[in-house]
Amino acid sequence: MTDAKKGDPSKMKPKAASYYKQNRLKQLRAFCHTARSGSISKAATKLYLSQPSVSLQIQALERELNTILFERRGPKISLTPDGKELLDIALPMVEGMDSLRDTFASRSGNLNSGYINIAAGESTILYMLPKTIKSFSRQYPGVRIRLHNVNGVDGLAMLRADDADFAVGSLLEVPDDMNYFPICRFTPTLITPINHPLAGKERVRLEEIAAYSLILPPRYLSTWNIVISTFQRHNIKHNVSLETGGWEVIKRYVELGIGISIVTDICLEKKDRLGVIPVGEHFAPRNYGIILRRGKFISAQASRFIETLSPEFFRRSGHVQDPASFRSSHDSN
Image 1: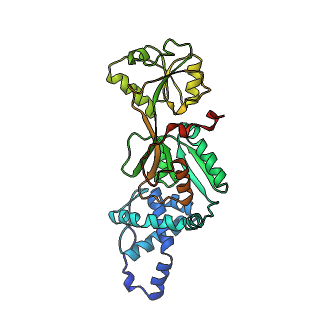
Image 2: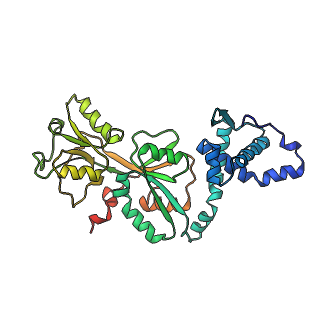
Image 3: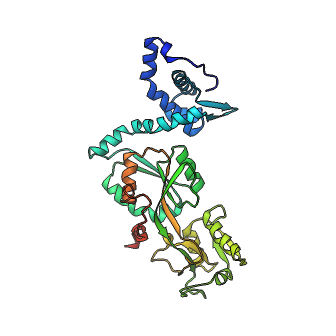
């Protein structure tokens, strides 16, 4: 950091140099957690250390490498160019060492401990993941799964802070620090009450949809932007009478006759009492996939879960599977 004094490791006494090398992993771990969280206090909390201890470890690493790794700007810290280079080198090493036990257990056929943190939206948790979680939990009952119900922005933040191993969901724009691998595609679908004038039609025009009150998710979600921008692009007036979150809530209000809605067919089930009309010719299909932070070390548990979700993932990233394979289990009951 900027207040650290540079030193030449070659001029250190043998015992001092040996001490720093023996503690290099601790120093690199402190550096990586600080870099990922952007905060010494957050890194200290994760490492169960005091803030001065984390600062001292980073300063020792800076002395050994004879460089400055962080710049301080008020209460915030940011990586220097050398810090960014070191993070690219050190992060996979630190993550690999921290996961050594689980990786060894996996390769020796004894993967039955540890945990996975998965960031996903409500629709993904409700409709896409249940069968995978059920299958994975039966095969690896000792691995704990933590599902974090978050929107897209918060999910990306969790990936950047290493609070999630990976995310599952739909991503319209891929940030530079993320990798996105679509594994399934779903069709935009108009849903109506069963007795609605549009129910039973095979195709509908945008003007016909716009003639009725719409129920849509909140405007900060991507579905709102997709639907509204389509109407605006064709200069078609429309009326959003209700904004509410969650496909189950939207389906319920449509069933009650309060309005109609555009959903992706990931949320549709045989039990639904709805009129269903595909509208893929008007609205682009939605891909759902796996989102990973670039350079992220994937733990053995996370790797097995991803393989359960998409068996071809590691052999053919971007593989699109049959949407039917993701239907929630009660579809087959």
